[in-house]
Length: 352
Image (cartoon, rainbow, N blue to C red):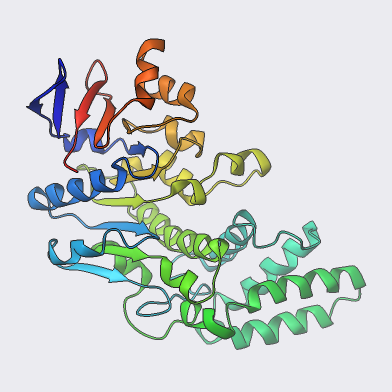
């Protein structure tokens, strides 16, 4: 974009890749330029850097990029891609089992189930019988092993809890969502992170899934991203190696998550712990009502027109009280941007 000075667009601005390594958050009400900003960012970035990225969206606003970005893969869960949640893909099977349970819990998929520590242990025990053995990594084995596990326990409430969990999970093995969670062929999940990928989660909704199902799917994908980065570690760090971009981040790492549960989302973990491995996280939201851990770990903050939680954006952008009022007056395509390596925030006009 161009920096606005004295009400005129004067100087071209390019973000340095070293600034991007500190993560970025983009905020603004619908229709003011967030997605357009990222579209232009990707077009510009891919002209200068040949790095893999994962872009997650719901609305189909990025599909046209396949004609403009070479070798961009469009992944549609249930249509041309699926995952096997029981397959650790090289990670420790017991750790994988624990994390699958945590993803279910943090995603709200166990809400309404009579929860107990015993139920958690039972669920993880069942997963521990499935994940280590390739022949057990399927829904039929899950059904058989969980039924056997339930039959061996005599406590009635315990049985009811296990049955309730089975019913919640069974929807992924039957009906329209089966095509999302039954791995057939194609890329392994970890192979996605070697390519430029657009992950279109709207296919899950079209198949009859809900927001929680899309959240579960994305968290599973991010779990494998976490495993790959942790396996590599921060040795021989040479800057950004992969970019993860998440539209509508308020669904995947809401501010309320950390307040209502001790669990964190994988987006939070990536923001906090994977920077040193070469992972860059870019999140977009209509307002800054996302995890404070993500916001606190962003070196680049961009705000288009915004009317809500302006006090939060004032603090993040490091602007004064008078400048805060400009957040509501920004025109379409205009944004206030703060970069850690630049002393003061400034006004930018982006192509729209």
